Image 1 (cartoon, rainbow over the protein chains, first blue to last red):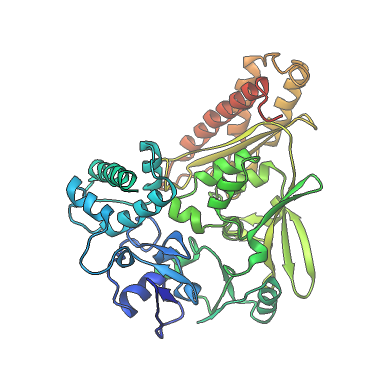
Image 2: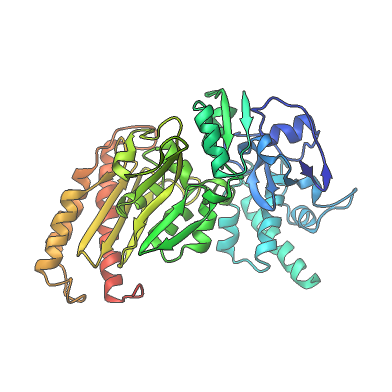
Amino acid sequence: MRVNGAWREADVWPGTSLLAFLREALGLYGSKNACEQGECGSCSVWLDGTLACSCLVLAAQAHEREVRTVEGLTSGDRLHPIQEAFLEAGAVQCGFCTPGFVVAVADLLDKDANPSPATVREALSGNLCRCTGYQKILDAVQLAAERRRAGS
Amino acid sequence: MEVLLPHSLDEALEIKAEHPEAVPLSGGTDLMVEMNFGRVRPPAIVDLSRVAELTTWREENGHAFLGSGVTYTTIVREMQAYEPLVQASRSVGSPQIRNRGTVGGNLGTASPAGDALPVLAAYDAEIVLRSRARGERSLPWNLFLTGPKKTATAPDELIIGARWRRLRGPGSFSKIGTRNAMVIAVAGLCLVIDEEHRRVNVALGSVGPTILRATQAEERVSAALASSGTWDDRSAPLNPQWIDEFAELVATAAQPLDDVRGTAAYRRHGCRVLSRRALGWALSERRLPTWL
């Protein structure tokens, strides 16, 4: 499969999830392993451009397909504007849920540059934060959206 | 374990003929949970996500056909003319789940809590199955869903989709749960009005071993709408006592159990509340017929 632009392959047990493949076979630890049942969104990635929980994708389903993970948002040490907005708004507490949220927010802002508060809540309804920092996360989305509109 | 990746429906049917034990996988929102928790270890998996024939829907001869591989996100985006189906689809899981979960998954898993199922039942949909050996067959939804998590699908068959006659009239899907998102319904209800046949159809989810139709309630309220002249004169009011009776008959049709998500009494009460609301919405929509 193509992961963040590069073709990658590994021999794994056929029942391996895409999440386990990314973490254990490719060493991409940004996608987090928490609930393994699609409840928490911590493992959110794009499969052929569509936001999905990688724990619910069989790795073999991504064969010859395009996968983009949180690591693919930026290169090197630079932060993505959404990541910067999360830091500035205080939306990062323990940080475990952050990569999944950042991916879900990037997916939302690609579709809707000026989302209403209700749209943001619905778009992030599949991501759980157990530090319950939701208000700061919603603030971060508005900050990222404003900057993105100002910059484009 | 073997994973098979067919690229066409013919290829997928070929695989099911030769490996009837292969479990179909599409969005993975049911099967992958079971696999991740080690509850199932199928000897083989047939991945249907590349079978393009299953991922489309269409209208033909006054009927709608919904392919089993159509995702809930696609339904919400493209099928606005089928409002109860859109409402049910939007209530499924989260964006991530709706992007992957398919109608075929609701049908194949056959959980009484599958959100699309009460809608298909209220539409009187038939489920289309196909095998290499015997070709295509269709079953009415109630003969397809044979019990909790049980269907009439033969081991060599695949679920191709659902087909129903397009109804003219308002309708809705509503459900009760602890949140607006990521919720397995404690009770779900779809009500549709069929103006052409002057009928009200009501289907219930999560309140019985499988999806239920409240047939007695349907008949009584359809007759009440006739006796009050409401079929012909959309502004003619329905006597409130008929609305009470309707809600009571819908609650009686439920066969709920106590479980971790709710008690039987609460589910039955939920049916009473949902049915009253759904009938009210439909009647006020008839007075402002945007669906014409």
